[in-house]
Image (cartoon, rainbow, N blue to C red; front, side, top):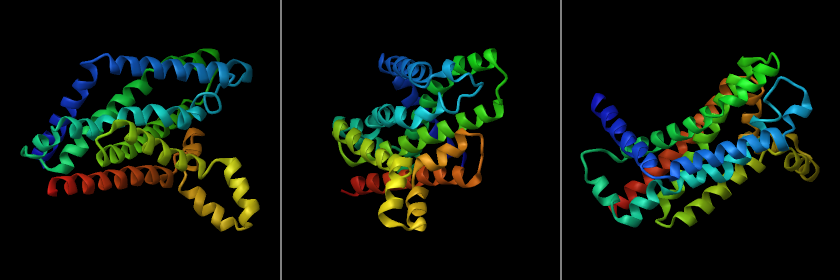
Length: 250
């Protein structure tokens, strides 16, 4: 067990160091913070709302903000290894495919968590201007981190499918977009009109990240929502391991 954790942490440190060895990480963080600020203060109408809350001005944009930024992080995880031919070297090392997958995923997730944590000035601003419920804000951050992890796991899976990073990015965006639209209110209303079956609408919405993220951003830490994101991450990483093992066998 200790050996497995050591191997995972070694891979994670290697990957995390690789991010900051080039300007890419810093460019990504700057773009993320600029877009988060733009959507919060300009599009979300933070000051116009006059509410000491981040629900409808900050967190509500994260599913759409992550839609392109997170796949951009995940597209290189395995595609780059396959393109450079280093995946064979990695898989011949004394580590399992699962350990390599977990190490790469955790490194990227930590990187995204760092970018999210750097939005703390927004939380400080709302606390300075009013008396918000910081428990709700904390739940929103938890939900945002889980959402980013789910998108990233999908990106990890699509990255293992091809050595072309652009294809990996596009497929990942399409899958994530489907998971958004499945529970998007305009889509659910359209399904209600077409099917006239509440159960069908509920079943489709149950697979949507929007349905589960909406509850978390409002401060409702429901176990079912957390289990949904954890299950989505676990399934995507399992699919990644199947693809990687197939590549090894080939």
